[in-house]
Image (tube, rainbow, N blue to C red; front, side, top):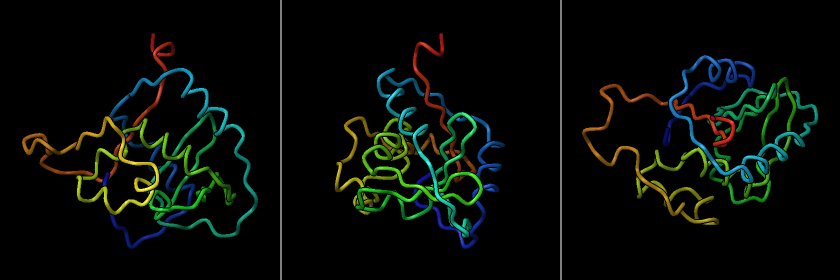
Length: 161
């Protein structure tokens, strides 16, 4: 949620375990075409061996039995390809356009206030989502203990029926 700094790097496996244990905060329905596009991209993701997998991960994407971890400053990158880590020490690349679409669908940017959005180069390249709504805009809605982790499940309406 937003800009969170951690002095501790962990393995992709530990990050995936933490994400798995966190309760689901939100389920978001997206159009079938977009869901299918994400599934094709994620199923076609193949990594190459990389001896180092300890990083300051911020985003976990789980698709079927595959956990994909993305470290900072990935969403801040202006490269066409974003480094992602798959499972046990595999390094792969996700297009920044697909990552942007996934993050928009998951409402990731809603956890940054308007001023902070200016510091995310990915948004400079693709623009702030038109449906952006700052999560904490109503001061009464801020939980007493603000957490740093938020778990979103993307589904299609047909799967939820």
